[in-house]
Length: 150
Image (tube, rainbow, N blue to C red; front, side, top):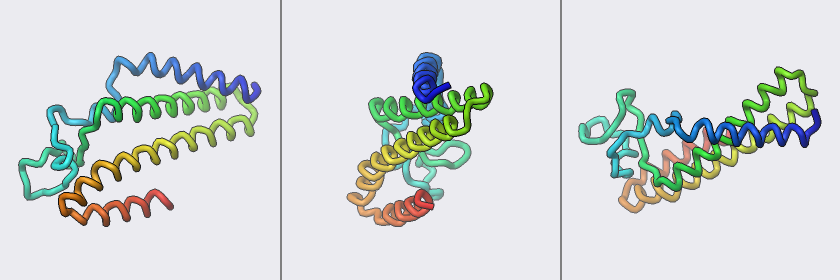
C-alpha cells in the first residue's frame, strides 16, 4: 500500500467518521453542562462559591459558541479517522515507514488542534479574567504552557 492509497484511506475514514458521529454525543459534548450561559463563572474553580456550576467530579467548564465547538469537533473527528487508519494499517501489516508517516501526520493534526484550542482559551478565558482583574489566570496560563512544552 503506497502513501497515496493511505491518504485516500484516511480521507475515506474521516468522511465515514463524520457521518457516524454527526448524530451522537462526543465526550466533549457530554461533559458540557446544559444551561450554563456564563463562561466566566464556569471557568473559576472556587470551592467556597456554591453557585459556581461544576459537575460531580469538580471539573471546570466553558460554554463555547456553536461555531467554535463545531470546528473543534471536526478536527477531532479527522484525527480519530487518522488513528483508525493507523489501526487498519497495522492490522494489514503495512510497511513500517508508511505507518510512521501516517502516525506523524496524526501527531501533527493533534498539535494543530492544541494550538487552535490554546488560542481560543487565551482570547476568551484568559483575556476576560485579566480584564476583570483576575491576574491569577496569567499564572495558570504559564503553568499550562510549561505542561504543553515538555
